[in-house]
Image 1 (cartoon, rainbow, N blue to C red):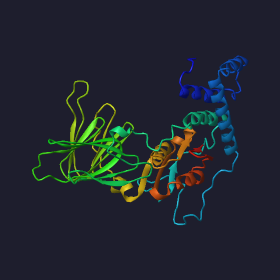
Image 2: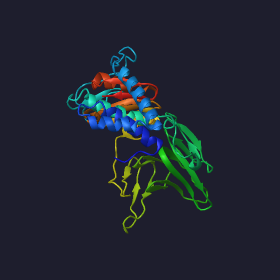
Image 3: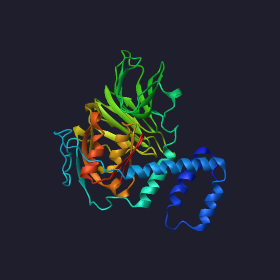
Amino acid sequence: MKEPKTRQEIESRAAWWIVRMRSPDFSPNEREELMAWRRHPDHEKAFRLALDTWGQLGKAAQAPRRKTTATRQPNLHATLQTPPARSPAVNGWAHAGSRSGKKAGWLGYAAAAALLLVAMWPGLQAANPFPMDRADHRTSYGEIRAVTLPDGSRVRLNTRTVIALRFSDSERRVELLEGEADFTVVAEPDRKRPFIVEAGQGQARALGTRFVVRRVGESLQFTALHHSIEVTTPSVDAKEPERVVLHPGEVVHVDPMAHLSPVEKPSQREIVPWERGRLVFDRVPFSQVIDEINRYRVERIVITNDDLAKRRVSAVFHLDDLDHVIDMAAEELQATVVPVPPYYTLLY
C-alpha cells in the first residue's frame, strides 16, 4: 500500500483505518501495521480526529429517525403508488421499486462514514469553490440572480453558477464555467457582433432572443426558449464539428466526447422549472434527485445505500422548502435519516 504523503492522503488513510479496524476480519498483522503507522505524530493526530468524528457519527446514529411533520405543510401530498408518466406529486414523492435495503448494513454505513470523514475537514467547505480569477459574475448555494450585461442583454443565474465575459469588437462571448444560466439577448443595431455562449465542449449562437445553457460536471445541455439557437461542438477525432439548430422548446445534450444527442422536446413543466421556483423530477434515480438538490444547499445530503440511490422517483419540490426532501425520504422511501452537524445528513 502506497504510503500517504499529503495531509489529505493521511486523513483519508486514517478514515480507512477506522473502518478497517471495525471489520470482523481485522487481523493481528493489520493491528500491528496500524500501531506502526500511528507512531508518526501526523498520522496519530489524523487518527484521533477520525476516531472522534466516528464517535460523533455513532451518537448521531442512535438518535430517533427523523419523521415527516404532517402538520407542517398540510397542502403537501405524497403517494406510494408507482408513478404514472409525468405526474409527480407536488412537493412530494411518487416512487417505484421494492423496499429491500431499507437500512444499510453496519459495514456499508461505516464505509460511507469514512468517506465523510475525509470530506468534512475544514477547507473543503468553501461555499463556492470555482476560481474567482475567471469569474465576472457568480452565485452561491440557493442564490438566483439577474445580471445585465454590457450590451444590455440579461442573464439569470441559477444556483452555483459562474460566468466570464469575453466581449470584443467582433463578438459578444460569455463562458459558462459551471451552473445554469438563462440568457435574454438584445439584438445590436448593426448586427455585427454575434452573441455566443461557450460551455465546455459546446457553444450556442443566438439566432433569436432567449435560451438556457446548463453545465454541471460533465453534463452539458442547451435549451431554446424564444426563437432559435445554433449549437455546435468542436471537431473530435478528425471529424467535422457537429451542428444543430434548436427551435423553441427543444433541448440537446452534449456528451463528454463532444457528440450531440438527438433533439428532445420535453413537457413545458420540465423546461427551466427553477425559474418558477420548483425542481421537477420524473422517474429518475433518487441519487439524481439528491445531486440536484445539493446544488441549492450548503448542508449536504448523502445517500449511503446503493439500493436507495437507485430507486426511481417522481417529485416536485419548491426551492424555498428543500429541507422537506429529507422528511419525505424518511416517510415515503422509509429511509433512515442521520444528521451529522453542521454539514451533512446521511440517508440509508
